[in-house]
Each structure stands twice: as C-alpha cells, then as structure tokens.
Length: 133
Image 1 (cartoon, helix red, strand yellow):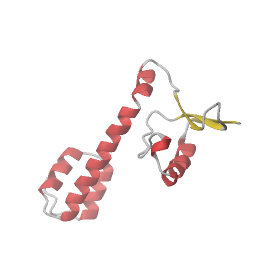
Image 2: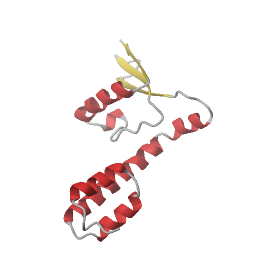
Image 3: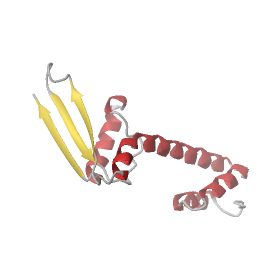
C-alpha cells in the first residue's frame, strides 16, 4: 500500500475506519513522514491497552462463555468494616465495553477516576452503590 498520495488526515481516517489495519501499519512504517510514525506508535499503544483490558476481563469472559449474560465487577473503598465507613459498588458493563485506563481504583488518580466514573455511569448496564457507616 502506497500512502504517499494520502494526506495525514486521510491516513488518520483510514485508522479510524479500522479495516486492513495490518497493511496500513506496515505502510506507515515505510512512509518517511514523522506523522506516520506517530500514528503507528499511537496505534501500538491502543492495541497494547486493548490487550491489557482483554486480560482484565478474563473472569467475565469465562462467565459469558458459561452462558451468563450479566457479570458484575465489585470494588470497595474505605478503611474496612472495623475502622469506619466503606463504599461498595457493583457494576455490570456491556460485554463489548472496553474503557481505556480502567484499572483498580487505588491505582488511578482522582482526575482519571472522575473521568472514568462519568463514562461508566453513562454506559453501564446496571450499577449499585452502598455506603456503610
């Protein structure tokens, strides 16, 4: 595939379409434009993030393969049941939902947690939160 006749914007659109990505990445590696190299690095980072997320969903995938349609992820925050208030949440996400940056809440900055919260709440199948004093 010769990309010399395409603008960088057109190449970005080709990445967004998602078809023939392997050929597109190979062609970008052959292209001398710096922007093409950046596009390849961005694509590789996104693919690595998808693989990380795919690994995080192993338990869910196993449950879905066993015929379960809804699987809730559960997390807690607080000092524990003996030392003070605890917040517990269960969230059911769509099976096709991969949200970049999602991780154990303790590994995320407050800013990223807030950003993810908004998107999770908007796209979750169901959410249940409990606050225990």
